[in-house]
Image 1 (spheres, helix red, strand yellow):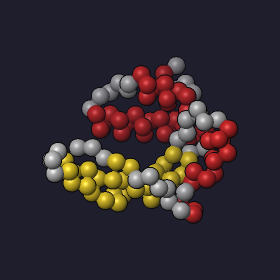
Image 2 (cartoon, rainbow, N blue to C red):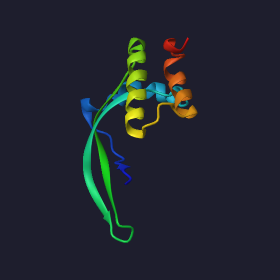
Image 3 (cartoon, rainbow, N blue to C red):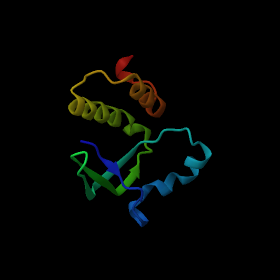
Image 4 (cartoon, rainbow, N blue to C red):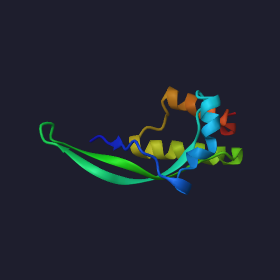
Length: 109
């Protein structure tokens, strides 16, 4: 089963991306970490493909800026990846993304 993401962001205070809008423009290559609350805004049934596709809607998004939270976020991301996939080793690309955001993992040194 697949899922889609609605193209709109929440309005007003629920859209924490506004806080980093300038950073997104000035350093578009930088990876940011955000906490997202989402739900399902619609469900599409593709009869020919016998597929049901939910479309997720972002209800609230907040960017994590505090470096002290980096280790906790790294642990949570790893834990949830392992739960979802059953794999204990992260793909190289995800490890590189984690290093780009959080730096080297002190637990690995």
